[in-house]
Image (cartoon, rainbow over all chains, first blue to last red):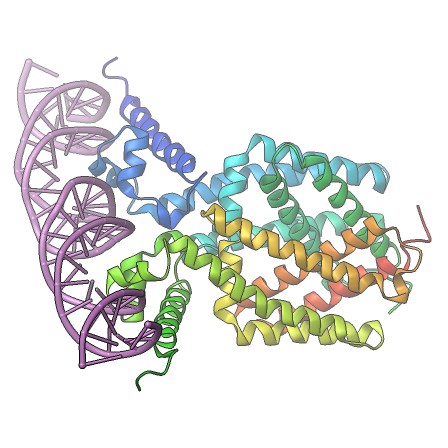
Length: 207
Length: 207
DNA sequence: AAAGTCGGCAAACGGTTGTTTACTGAATGA
DNA sequence: TCATTCAGTAAACAACCGTTTGCCGACTTT
């Protein structure tokens, strides 16, 4: 354990992780504006002063949490876009993936839902910027599908935003409902997606 | 100013209003979990102890704010449902009404968006319950329209929820965008509503 | 006019907060 | 091996916090 560079870095990363995880844990039941530096360090097993070796303040830590939370969400979206099959199967699969994601990343999803319109500007903006990128990615995916042939780019974009918005709302509903109401949420989400798909199919026929 | 009953009550109501308004003002830039009793009383021009003559704690006050915020929203929804005309005009009018409402009740809307998934359970539940009632009201309105002839009740309900969700998302987007981006938000919202309407028109044609 | 009600206040309670300070000791590089 | 770096610490700081207490004085009732 000596003269091997990196030990120090690794220990620091470990503390940093403990701070991030501790904060995420506290944010499960509280708001970002409702937790404090001391509380987080207590949760992480550090002294209060130790916090400042890693972050300037709590909102800086929170922005890192945003990035981590959306990285996992990003993976999910890519998985959704990679699916293939008829639209019915695709819808089922999409809703299942959302449900899985909420189950496996409950804390992340809750954090995003809570702070998306929360009281800390920097965090709000970080989330908004990342959702923007999601919409772009979804738009690119939709644009590549045969169903979007002949669509103006702006229309593809608004459809992508509708999908993203619906996905976020569905995830939040899963959260709030708990395991019991999961079935009902999923059924509603699927039907709504079917209706949107119907509209999509006839979009160019009229108006 | 004496021996006339009601003076006391009126003065008390005035203080109560000052507390509610003060809190709503603070909530414009902060989270509910981020403000304190003392802060609110300072804003309202009362002493800290005075607060407890009106509310047990801040979340009790917040629940009252929820009711007031949703009363105004409720009025807007009724106005939307009362509109008549072809679907194109109806969509335009709806989005305009949402924009108006956000302009005139900025603080209320912000408060709802912020605390809908916020850290205080009682408040979250109060908002959720009221949104539930909205969905029912919208469902009743949709069910009465000729366009819903032959629709199963469950489908009407899910459409209502989709509309409500979209309305809330649009209002939140107006908030975040400010006057500058208002046009873009409105355009997107209108197009999305047109797509949903298209889906609605062809809902019974296919599987 | 006297008695009662009660909204608002000042003061005090113990407790928490964010942040800075000077320090220690292990990991590091020469 | 010896000097340096630096993550983590304990302690202190002043500033708040929520809540309770006892009291006052204006309204209200009798």
